[in-house]
Length: 85
Image (cartoon, rainbow, N blue to C red; front, side, top):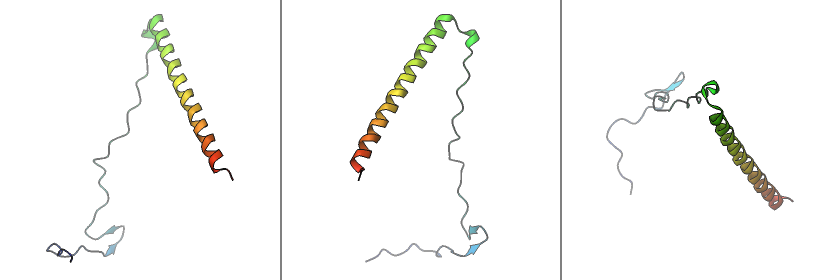
């Protein structure tokens, strides 16, 4: 039927204050710290061509974000039309 329980005393279940007897609060040592903020770009050290390239890259990133917003709005509208009563 059932496998026998491991030898030893059963775990304690008495409640004392803020912890169960014999147990401890969660260990947070293994939780990764939040990512560090990206370093500030020093525009005064960049050439005009580098600045123009940087602006072009940012515009591309903005276009990607706007395309994703449009796609999500479309999906939300499609879902709303399916569940509309």
